[in-house]
Length: 91
Image 1 (cartoon, rainbow, N blue to C red):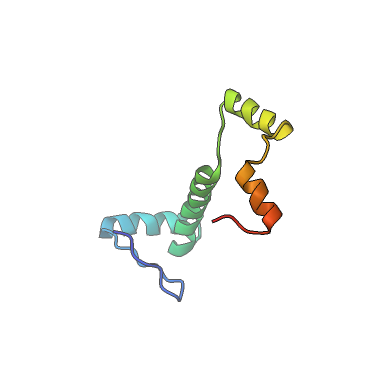
Image 2 (image 1 turned 60 degrees about the vertical axis):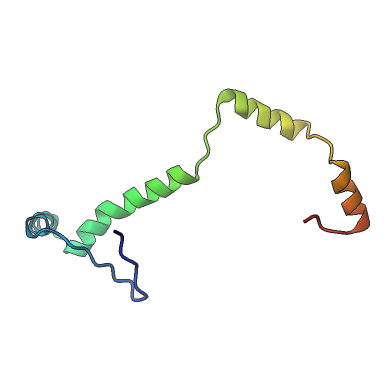
């Protein structure tokens, strides 16, 4: 279960002793502390995961449909036109 990030920026991680030893050894071979080693591996992955989740990929058919709608947008519905003329926001 993920642990909450505290206000001081600390994150706790429970590892098996052999996993910690492996990470510590790898970090020392790269001349990094354990935090720097873990962040160096985890942050690029996190940024890639966020970018992937925020990117929308359209099929060619859908891309052409969006472009067609941008070039020739449909008319506003009557209800919207009436609301704009009356100066009211729609719910």
